[in-house]
Image (cartoon, rainbow, N blue to C red; front, side, top):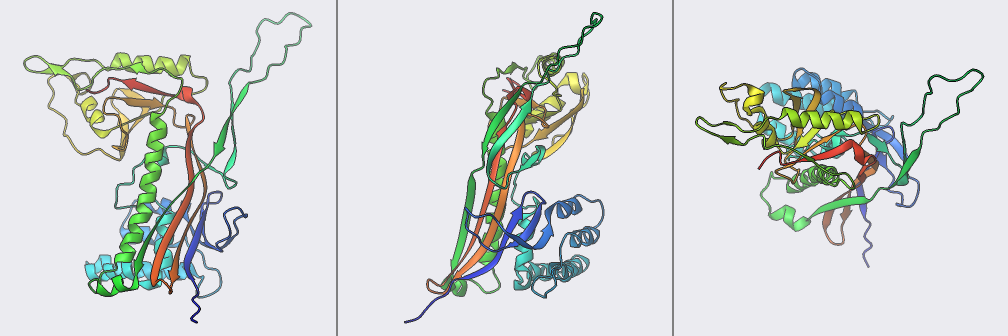
Length: 387
């Protein structure tokens, strides 16, 4: 009788507290996770992506995010030096086959798994909404988020010998239970044999799955933004409405902005109007409004603005974030992104398992993540902003 042993390959786990990806011991879900042999600091790696400079300069910065742990198999910085040296050569020579060889190389599979786990640098559109909000590390997956009300009082014109009465800010709690998400891809030995040589289909599937995780997290965040309970919407104007000969904009946005600013300054305690979120085309309609660009001025250059953000003409201190993951084609969402929603994140796990009995190799990734509204007064929907 033949005995088969499952083979675990490249098990890794992301610690949301220190933002480091570690080699994983595959402890049970209900056990305390044990983090050993750090691989890469996701915070440093992501910062390197945003640096100005050449690809080679960014790669040098990325190398500093990796760790050496004293053995050939766990000296991940040494592996990164070798991998990025080859990447730099591919860039210098323009040799696409050399670049493809790096991507499919078996030498760097742990780096490939780890890097996608720890960064949002993707080819598939994964959205930009998750990065808007503060992440709260939630290693225990359950807890309460505490909100303090800004209602401490300061008294004026106190009579002689009268000490002010103490006041204490009220507080509310939001219960947080972070759910688990996951996906897997697999390939059989026979499939490897019959597929054209030189095409590493499994690696492509793994890469797609990792990117789909990020895309799913962005969709969850979009759904949370659009789910506003207990707060009535603000009536907006259709920025793109035009009439007449020649056609001119029929609406003036300034009154809407005034209403929004007055709401945040007069109604919401300690919150600022600093962010707009919507589909991309609504932003294009706004900047093309004659009251914004100027009467009879040449039309603004139209371009794809999905997954981009910029300042807003006519409103200081506000960033307009465009992401076509948003469902509504008529609503913009105005918010204080520092207060309304938090991203509660637990560990993220990935590993590959080889089963010689079924002749399959399976890649699995699991994440614990929850976008949660903690202050519903710091976000409002503005209806009728487009038709």
